Image (cartoon, rainbow, N blue to C red):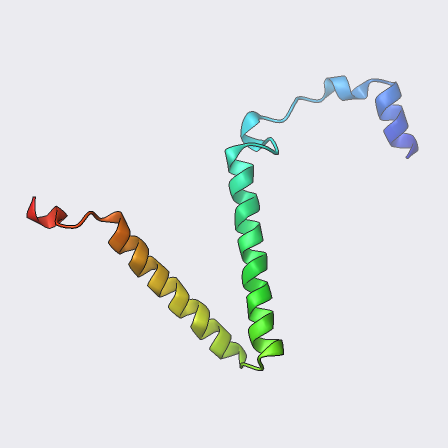
Length: 88
């Protein structure tokens, strides 16, 4: 506490360079990192639900996540390519 008060009262904060806009809390990069962290927490929550509440074995939970990953990649691949693009 004393160090923080001295930091403010002695104006030591003026010698510190500001954070780059890329690493600011409201930047696109940090918002994306936050979303990925929230996604990982949601996946962990789902895994705990499957293994603890439902009683599914751990390998079963991993299998579900593997299938969801494969199918979401398939759907994203189909959606990202316009229909009939090979015929042009």
